[in-house]
Image (cartoon, rainbow, N blue to C red):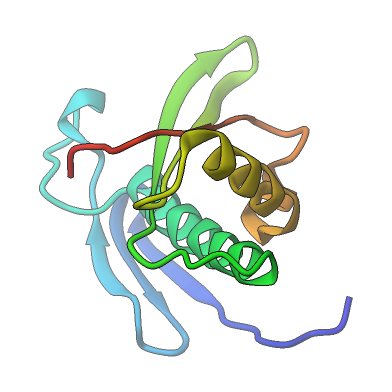
Length: 142
């Protein structure tokens, strides 16, 4: 791999109940366990950060793939739904990626989404590690 960009982040406090900041200064926030896990909530958590990062990265890959096919992906949206669950070894993540491209049929969007899944760095990192479902949809509520 040819290195193109490197950033680091330091977590302090209590892991899921503390603070995280990136070396480039773009991330600098408190993290708290969500209320569903017994925490106080009202702050980011590892799953919300992962969902945001995966959605953003996948959207970039989708736009790249659509552009290479000569398809205008203006109005496209990607939602990453990240679930934390328990398995026999402790905890496990799963993700569902929903993709919308305005004015494009769902079958074509699905094809583009599957191509994006092949090139997205987050998809590559999660492949064969967690369950990831890629689903094109006509729309989704914000």
